[in-house]
Image (cartoon, rainbow, N blue to C red; front, side, top):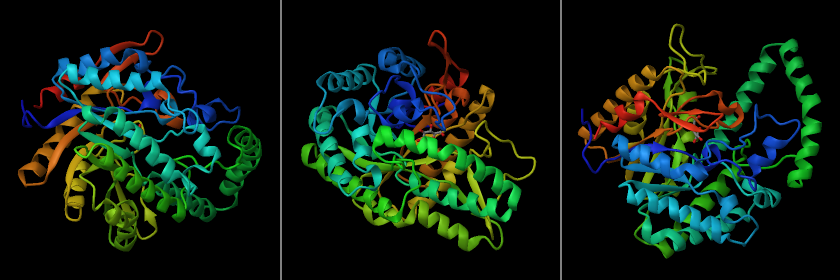
Length: 419
Ligand code: BGC
């Protein structure tokens, strides 16, 4: 039954590296090939979406969806610093046009975790030169495709690096608090693993500790991200003023139990509030939520006893997206688009239930007057879930990994029926 107006942006999201395959000029690709890699498996051919995007877009259109969020891969477009690749530029133009031909609004992300190797060799996401490099790429994209686009997300989950830094700190504290053995075991592994990996990093990136996008980020790196976003937004507006620009944030539904209020407030400030100044000029905010975090006096608590968990090991909590939308709308006054929300599960009936509850919450927010313009489920396809590899199945469409055959799930048509 229809839950949204016809012009509501209802669709699915992907990221280039997770679906396209053979993203060989990127930092992730290099990391996946290392002998001492922390990735469980390499991305390889992924879902071969690079060659099969037409089929994938058709599946969405046939299901009734009208929006597709995907990312353009910087490492393909600018494989060497300052050198733009015409063939790859044509490729993404074809993808954008294919969306239009199928009545699908393309929502393009410029950076979704992966970067060109040359950028990391220059210091990556901690380097003062990165905002200008990113703005040059953003300008190129806006000049090339500007007339065909209405929405651009500059950076996916701009806050991911500082979230990872905070989690790393908490794990370290817990390890230290848990006593010698646990610390010893982990540290031993670290000692064994890290010098070898460091050497491989040195060869690939010219540094033992590459500042890739998802590395634990320093306060300086956080500034770099904000500068990169602002510089890209300016470049896009100069080249194509009609485009609506925003970035996306990973936002937990941060809740607290008595005694955890201050830590919960700190967490929300880290994830969201301290970015308000840089976001003030954005047209929209991409809201990405998967679960909730409950905070006690000593930090985040385990999933409550008896609660269902997803394959990712966090709590099944589809109510989270509506909570987060209401919370961000108190302080951010542009449009809101749910750019990611989803569940990793082998049981598609749980995905159907998740989408049902989550989208009811989104519809309630709209009824309350919140400017929510879209809902993009993560993800269109079962795909490469970064360090966890292919075992996590978020997709509306399954995959035969041998043949790359697409296996649409019931959740795809359930989502499509909502407008
Ligand atoms: C990222 C996606 C990822 C998804 C599921 C988000 O943090 O943007 O790339 O696959 O979560 O874990």
